[in-house]
Image (tube, rainbow, N blue to C red; front, side, top):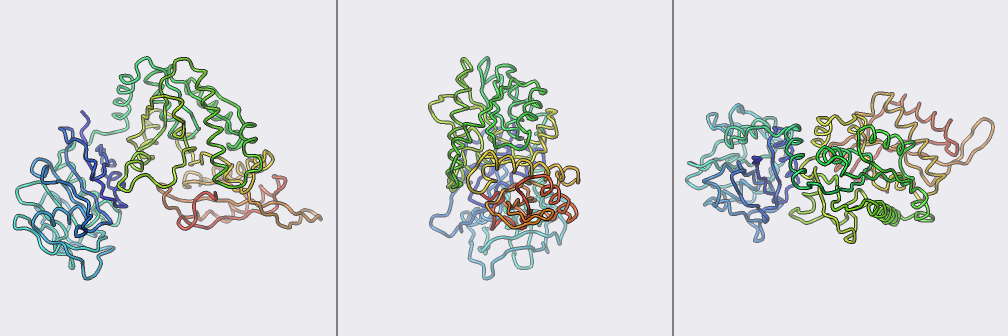
Length: 509
């Protein structure tokens, strides 16, 4: 039985980050909404209560019956979690006279407390709260303070229940990882055995048991998630996995054949489908970004459904869904307002009547890459930049034509090849060229030109939620610009996007 830590989400923006930090210590954890707590069995080694935008003093404050568990399991309350335990256990939480936000230093640390082993006095922590714990019950012991927050951390005497007012999961808390390790290893007694190799072994065994001799159909995109999912399924069921790779005519230059070749070298049972014209026909005259997305999603479903029906006796649909998608769908605040179903096969309609298998639905993106590396997948696939599901259609502003696609493919290939040869590709989270519906005057030789503009985009990011534009070397940008203008007919100007997210998005559409 896989041991685990439960993280109860009260709506904090940092909840996923807590999970990332736990996973970095090779300990498996799961995030669950505070109001959908699963059965706590012997596999659960401890519980972490997250922060929250709510105040415990609000009438609609989120509630969790921690009394049921705090004498049998280690519990760590973080920020709201700490205030919640204090408030509903005989203490008092009040609005702070000055909002505690940002860096602070611990001027008192109870060194012999197991939670603060090897955490020195003066350690920097990150505060983010408007309320403060004004009074604690008699069976609480203060184990850390700052100059302005007396109850920065506490323990309930005789139990393994702890509360901290600061956020150990953010890098600004310099000893946050040590504190989490103290809680998880010394207090919860987790064995730190959750590694890529152990995940692969367990997952393949589970897939064999679940799928037996059944057939699975999986749509491949050439990206990291679907590729790793395919290899896991292939190792579990072999030729009973039927992979489908659709050429929608909106991929990067020569990508369809190169990706198809790499998959076949991996031994996958894969069928490539050239559906370029069907997508171009559906996109003819369509300029609105959302209409383009919907048209691409609809045609993809039709093409995939046709191909899936050619597989006799298929009963499962494989998907490369990863953990952030799962968390989003059951989050405290509910699923996001806009779900881009075209990014994978998640938008397939009910009429396909297939059961779903998702081998990666407990992994974050970086964990998927580590598992892929352990599986021996080509580094070129694992290191591939994120690429939008609608492909180049949303990097061509305005209507999409085969001619514009060809121009953008050529420009994009020059751009990406130069990032690789310049040694910066792996330092960039995502890069791509955008075809703008703007024409400008230029001079080539002795002739006046009036041609289109290519915009280059490159961003740095950890997870795609926020992003900063990359400060690429000027000489590299100059080389890329010259090559595009000299070699791509129809382009006479190249610009570079220096917008960050927010307020701008990574893609233009």
